[in-house]
Length: 352
Image (cartoon, rainbow, N blue to C red):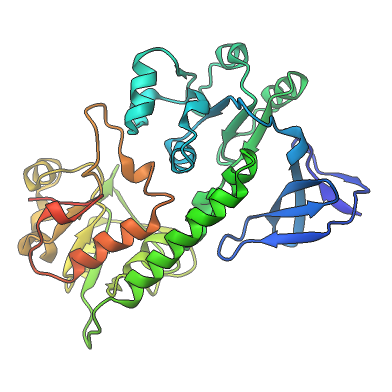
């Protein structure tokens, strides 16, 4: 007997199932896998020691898939597979960067149905997607789940944000490969990303003293610092640098005040991921004390918003989720030079 989650029913049920011929556990991702049975494959989620079964490949359309995505992150995986024409609904059209999606949104081919917690349910149901892709974060609308099931609309949770290794997040492309019956293509894309990531990581300069890196900025009087086992910390380490808060390992983020961060980062060389800021002037207008930080004085402040369109759609939160190799390449460039032309960077730009 093993736990089963059928379609969009959130209740774990006990039932007998066929014995899998094989399990395809991921190389890095820890939260999902794909099992092969006689005549079909089946997606499963991993929650601690529990295996939670989800969709069978036979329940998915063979072609002409219609998908609603409640995050630009999910669209990024679909775009990497070259299947963005399948997207018929998004949460907020201002979040998207892909030129093909933006064009289809302008032409009315893609509808905005609202974000998690503010979903325009009747509008979504009227579009009749085959799949609604969301995350488990804050989504607990039991009534909607029941209605979706009755209309044969499958709701799937993509929780790649919970993975803390950059390649684990990227490996969720195999989740999308399963949904579109394109597992071979997804595997091939991931292998290329993995190999490129490893090549970049292994080519980072060897230094006795590594540059020290701080991240993020104040938000509502709180500075949320990623923990030492976080996605950001792993990227910094793989890029050949040292994350200032490596010792904070218990949680993903730690809420600190500005004074605590200023003291802890006194020897920092670089500062990345500074919220929405594009210039130092913008930073100082919000908080003049940013000028006291050493990377600010060194003009070593970089943000991940180079590929942001006029509507605010940032490709870092779209393509960046799957293209971990391009993110790492940018950081290696940044940490390897005193001054670097933003022309060499893909996602990042100098905040000056």
